[in-house]
Image (cartoon, rainbow over all chains, first blue to last red):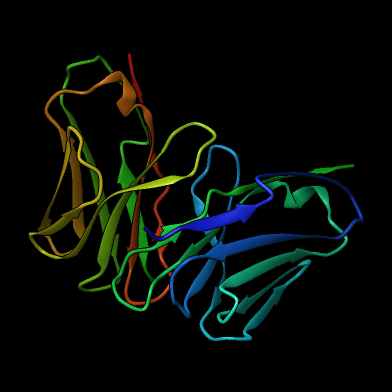
Length: 111
Length: 110
């Protein structure tokens, strides 16, 4: 059974601090996606990582992919309140069209 | 550009009543289409996905069904709703790359 695990599940951090969210998966894949979900809203695509060593950055968020370790990270730099949301990673195996989502990480940035 | 629509946005239905949720995509052809359900405060549960007209794969056995009568239309149905069917229903599409989500339908079964 394919598993996608995120940790932590809940994260409360102060503004200005740095932190990393981890996404581990159990299949061979070179397609990893990060999404953001605001309360009561749908999912918004953040990053697409399509190869080993891929790194993408947007503002205070940076995502990376290590396909050998089957690990992706989402690093938050100098957090601000606007980053408060739930973040999901999703993996697509080499075979198939299904997206397998992680459990999500609920981030709260405290002023 | 591509857009994805879902309706209704919100629905309150009694137990045992039927359900029909619709999803349409504009601006792309032959997309892969997906239905997910998200319970309050939880992750995403894949319900159905489709790679073409009339081609539906079911991931979780339950009282829901899906149909794809047209290339860019995906419908989620039930003949008799259960309390446990309450949740946030999300439709999504992809064309070999990123999966894009619709605005969702919030369903409350009473």
